Length: 348
Image (cartoon, rainbow, N blue to C red; front, side, top):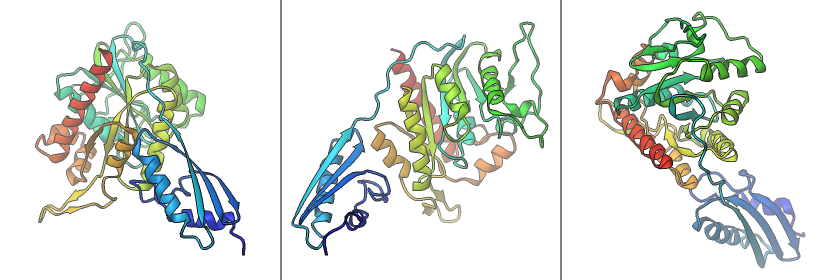
């Protein structure tokens, strides 16, 4: 029986992308298959800055194809695109703010707001003047995490006074709604609220304004990247592949609009059993680290699963200020220092 393309693709499913548990077919890297008698040609397209990946991938694919019955020669052509290079952005166009940083994720449930809150507090502990804008209009959580139910007031210039809690200037839809009231808004209104939070709030002089973005790559994200000169973006993920898939989408969005990716924070990285100190990799091991290496960006922190992180977030006093000696607190402060170094080096 002559060899078929489906047989070739099935065989290629045994080839994993270097450093990942996922195969090159499911990654969508196969661009073409040509079969002529006992000769098989495969064209593969990848995006990487790692010079070792193409040669390693070519060798692995070639070896795999030659295991197919009837295949005597395999021609593997790797097409390599370099990741989009970030270019310097113009000076921030929100008056008084030195750096605007977006904290993003491709999917919900990875702890992005927890990271945003603790990172903002860690930046303040490093001597920075910090604001935090909750851009998740539909699912705001920053108000609760900072333990404030205060409602904003207006200035004489009709600007909104931010709420101040734990020395951080805050704005969130959570300050404008009752606890159980949903934000029932269509796309244009969501965009308008986002712009008002950024430009109609009296932020004053800040070193860092942290934007807690909603999950995904929708209207709010596009509004921000198209209208605000971001100093960079931080991608939050958990170690497992299902989260990394969406994290890559968020990363690609920022790369396409020339927003630097300052680094990756791997949340829920591992669990240390309080009883014996044994480590459990509940959601996998080092997925964020491998992704940071692939993108050639910093792995800013690996935040463990700690019960206290959840408790302090629910109680309005995040872990960074509740317990400075917690492993997660130290990790957030280390991440904050690296963010400061990264942003300052880009200004010079």
